[in-house]
Length: 76
Image 1 (cartoon, rainbow, N blue to C red):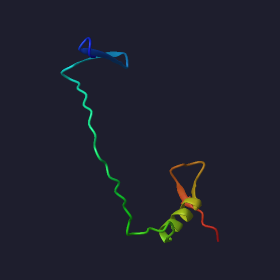
Image 2: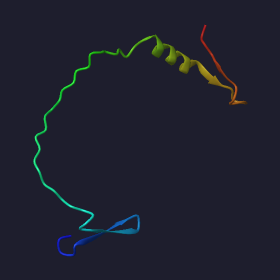
Image 3: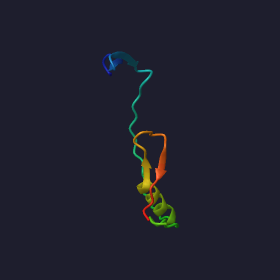
Image 4: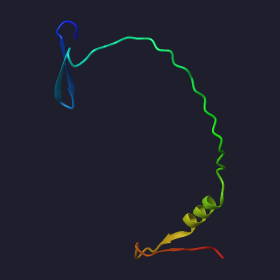
């Protein structure tokens, strides 16, 4: 780029020409601090909604002859 003042990039069999007006490089130093975050809400991974969803998913059936007719088969 320094000698020819342009560079050609091939992407998906298409050539793109970038000249020195389009691209510039800059070097700098920056202090970066780590921010730690502790959530104030604890969400348990269990609950009535999740249990009911698992039961419904386990009991959901589809008829072999007609896929549009579905039903739940709950054990007694």
